[in-house]
Length: 137
Image (cartoon, rainbow, N blue to C red; front, side, top):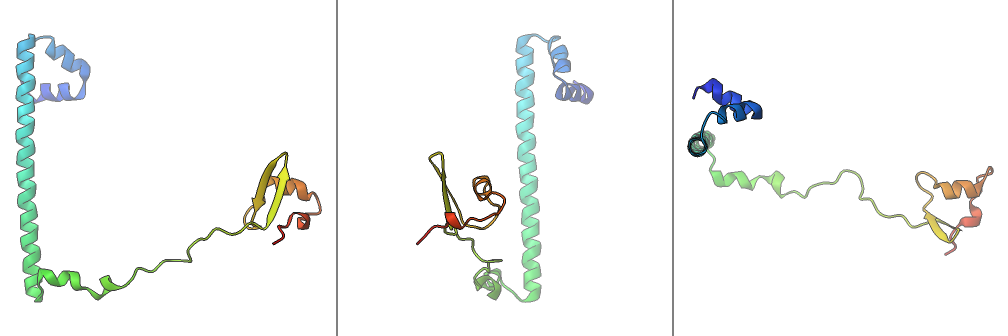
C-alpha cells in the first residue's frame, strides 16, 4: 500500500471504507494488526530519541556548571529561594453587613461597599436615605 493510500485512509473515513471494501475480513484484520505494530515501533523509536536528546542536554548543562565552578547541589541553595513569597495587595476579607432589609420574608444584607442591591435601591427611593436600615450593634 502506498503512502498516498495511507494518507487517504487517515484523512477520510469514506476513503478508508472504500479501500477496506476491497479486502476480505482476515486480510483487513492482519493489516490493522500490522499498522498497530508499526505504530508501537515508531512510538518506541521516538521515546528512545527523546531520551537520548534529554541525556545530551543534561550532559551539556553539567559541563556548563563545571565551567562555572558549580555543582548540581549548588542549584538548590539560592538565597532567593529561601525568601517567603510576597503577596500583591492585601488579602481579601469578608466585610460585616452594615444594612439589613426584609422584603416579603427574604432578608437581604449589604456591607455598604460595591454596587447597591436592587432591594435597597428600591427601598431608599429618590432621597437615597438608608439610615432606617442600619444594623444596630
